[in-house]
Image (cartoon, rainbow, N blue to C red; front, side):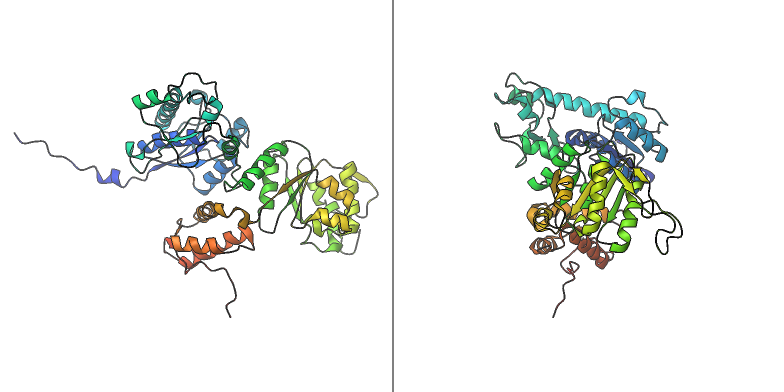
Length: 459
């Protein structure tokens, strides 16, 4: 009797394009567990830490499905789902924790998504039950201790990390026996927190805003400060060198505030001639000056109900600072050429690359205006101050550039060349250097030292 022949898989199946799922959650453990389950079901998985990042990922490449955690750090989940389904009606959307109640159209793979979601939640419970105690260490410390499973258990191409992030009181030290009976849990090399150590670093890493790329302490501090002040009306002054991301901080402050549905109106005080800056800010009536053939609403009034971002506030002329001070104090403005006052409700965020405190002391900037704008300070660091984040920033920008072309990678020598640079233009310069390198590389998937051009003049 001849054995049955082993048939190869159908060619059509081998050529089938993998389905893409987008997982949106601030919980890294949740994303990794779900990505592991979906990968086993032949899905390609992309991850987002919040609603804004998920929206950007969906716009860059439409996924077949989106799984949203029951809480997002930056947006209200219910409002996000309504707006997302309206903009992406063909995408199947599942909400973790309320899958059965999800509204909207259901895709053909809904059951696969629910199966992967339930499996990931079951695995979460198993891991937590085995890791509830750590030899007398409080469970809140154990919740921030990072764990990973051996990659060999599921193959080198699938996620291996397992993180116990449920905060509860721990009791008996049974983790060793429980883990040995299921799957061995091994501490991650450097990201785990030693027993009794301060857990603030892990908390900061978990709360990092998607705009603030990097794990350096100064970058985590920016995220912490943004989250603290964003829900308030408090004026914020952002100080930092040119190209260090001050505008990104302003956008994050607006996005996380209750004013996020109203406009964020930005004006660069250094880019507009002094003669026109007043009319640009406060608006003007018809015939207020030569060339004013019609009235115009100013930037401040256009931001009513939202946020006004005054970039490079240190360049504002002293004469105009006094008029801005009056508005900051009473919330009323007067258009150029008008006798009537208009009441406007805006939250003011200002930014500068100058040391405004020193300028206020020497008379270069009005001290009374400075103290009203600098109620809450956020300082963005130069890139050289968080150089350890360079690999993450390179990966971030190459991924961003890959939305229009295949994603490239940087070889070790090119990365070393980038690390040796002083970066006077900070993060903005890095982004431009990488964009230039991607163009110079042409069809090559790897960036080498030949493509890393800093634009320096060679004598």
